Image 1: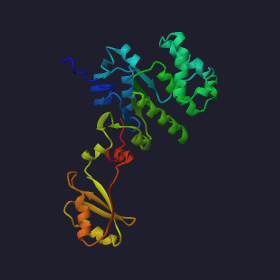
Image 2 (image 1 turned 90 degrees about the vertical axis):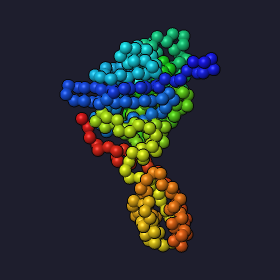
Image 3 (image 1 turned 45 degrees about the horizontal axis):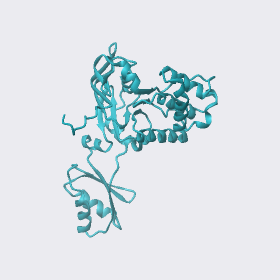
Image 4 (image 1 turned 60 degrees about the vertical axis):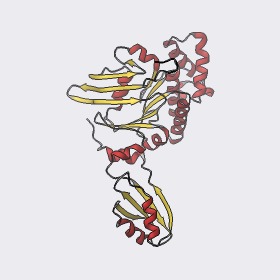
Length: 319
């Protein structure tokens, strides 16, 4: 490396052929996963797909049967102690001491991480402010709502300032307002430089929250990358919507006849067009309408939502 070169960032998470067996059952099957530093990464799969098993291995609670997993360059087996200092793991259901006050609870975990007593007080105040619980410092945990207890769980995993957060269904069981508040906190944590892996069934929220996702089924990786990139491995091709000033039936017939169109159908006065190939230039759609003597009023690409992606690339199978 020359003096002007900077070292390349190691991935936040890197697994190679990660496999976990439970007797004759394969929970993870040669999983290859890369999460870059700074990602807000959505981990998607049906119940039993292997999400929680993966997160537990990354958190050093389970050992792989085969393969390797590294967290910020540390092997989860050989360097388990180093891994535990750079991660914060929040399971889908975590126990709380309901007869403790909020600050007592966080102070206890700060002591577990050997944060000096003089520093712990400020650390507790800071994480409570970050998760929006400053006004609940002296409250008993048992008196907190489910949403506030989830935010307290986030505060707990942040107490030692980890670089990577592993969050297993953090919005599980929350009402819509509480879910929105938790998601806003995660966006702020990403802005502060944290890398976050979040598993969730609330796919519509992951679509707007995450910059990258992974979809697994029966322990196998089906897709990893941006939501938009999944189209490249679907057979359905690109979908566009076309609207005209009048005579939508004629527009439908014109587009159906074009050789680059796989399918065209009328939906609520609009024409939904599926192209044969991602490489096809969609400008022909407008040209076909105009040359056919019609007035084009709208042309846009259909946004493939995360829920649709999930349903189309999975079969709902579990081990």
